[in-house]
Image (cartoon, rainbow, N blue to C red; front, side, top):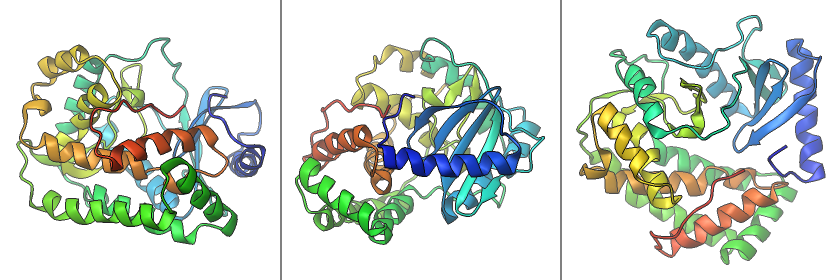
Length: 312
């Protein structure tokens, strides 16, 4: 298990896992937690189970299941949904999708390997109405607003975390992030893009590429295709990755976001996304909480050169 959870958090998610496995008939074999950021991702034999909970999780999973037919029709290389199970699998507030397992490579994929799958995805000319419009600032607002409805014990934990790790009362932290949303939203709405609007993956970093196949379609939407290039540039700037692999990606894909007039704005949007994405999911996850604290301290201080760390 690469993700550290407290015993209480592990017990809660185990109950959800047991329930959806029973519902799906996936009861044999040990479940190995591969990672847990927004979804808990388990390997169970030759299947992968992505587990989440809540109303938003259900809507998202239903959309992903529907989108897989579209991506298959257009021959986008993706991991494969398990069609032997009615999906998504829903038990009370728990929601899961089940996929065929692809062995993980021993090395981190090179960004150039994303070029062809993204080009295939971006070649889809239609804009299906079931896919939402790209709205990253609205998503950040929703996550911030959701903090107020956390259970009392989780809210208390998050308040204590904000005071200790970010050195701000939680209400002040949320107010400052809301102000960033207020600033960004009209600028994003007024932006013009060099690439056509169309289907975008929404979180196209190399961690979402397995053996040349795209995975994790929770953020699939209709938006500026530049957005799918942001993680590659941002990884070199914020996470200390070398820039040369991104340059090789540009040679194959044919567009350099780093020289585009839209890059500074898209960087701001990406960073807002990365400092709000798990704020409502910190209890029981000490390493994630500490990592997010570092991101927020440097983000709010305007330190654009600080190196961030990936969640494990």
